[in-house]
Picture: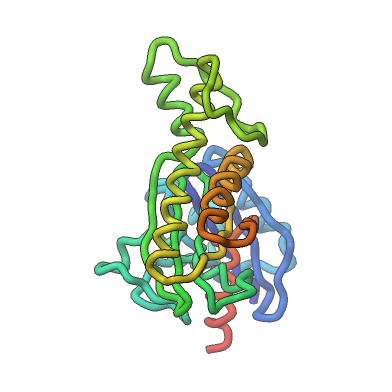
Length: 268
């Protein structure tokens, strides 16, 4: 049976599939919300007609309905939600379902990437919003942050003021500490806000667990932030006597989590 895996985000929808618990594909469809009708054509070109789809949706009921309408009539769709426990992953939220399903599946997806699972881990997702979530060594979700993403910060300054310009945030460079023009001031301010929040959580995990967390980063807006983030992390690491900190970039932790969930479902 062919099973679709769907990550419906605030801006885009990512879809891939599994043939069975042993076979995964590199085939990935990425659609903007305005082009979801293309999902129907893509499904018709698959090796088999999909009979089941599982996914997470944070884009609202209208997008969920459009995705359902674009699927073959024979394909049942189940939207997953965060739970108190999913496989080895445990949730510290008092009301587990209040945790975003995308964040939950993304943390489950870290299982495919954690080479040292005995250490805590952080997943930083640079999307429409930036989220910073932490797992301890016992796979307990410790909690996390949500704040406006890079482009939302940029847009809020440009649209919410009379004179501040929209700037290019795609460059991989450490911003100046003392900006000498408005563009530099906006760039430094946004990157400092993004990187500073992540460093704050890195220190919080270190203080709580006594162990340095491994940081995984994902999301299309990450590239401009990484140089400043690495600079700040390594500044604090030197103070604390740690070796150089590295970040591991991963492309689709939510889809990775959905694969893990689907394989477990097949096995049972």
